[in-house]
Length: 112
Image 1: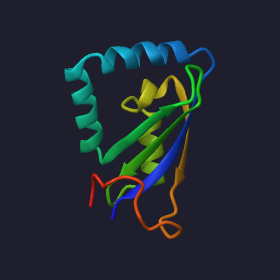
Image 2 (image 1 turned 90 degrees about the vertical axis):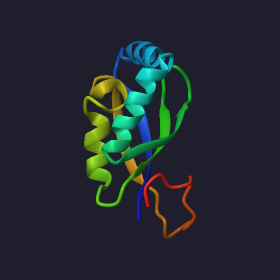
Image 3 (image 1 turned 180 degrees about the vertical axis):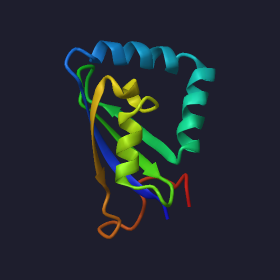
Image 4 (image 1 turned 60 degrees about the vertical axis):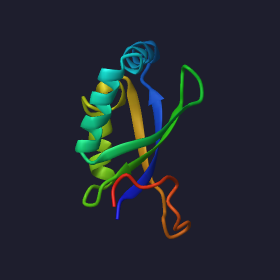
């Protein structure tokens, strides 16, 4: 079964404007956005929700990993060139959601 995580993103000093500029360009281009989402899904990850508190952060997200991928792989992915901010703009803290405390997933699963 897949696993869900809460990710706490904070911006590296001075990098919030860079992130928002690049994110805005990608979100404004349906082809680029679909390509990024498809690439992330093919890698075994899915960001269910993106919840910025304000333009300077923090940002909270709920991510899901397919079976066989865990917190370490998610951390590596989101810290890398295909993650949010391309690994240059954000510090990312990955925290697993404890399914034993709430067996219902927070979102419908992308991965079985």
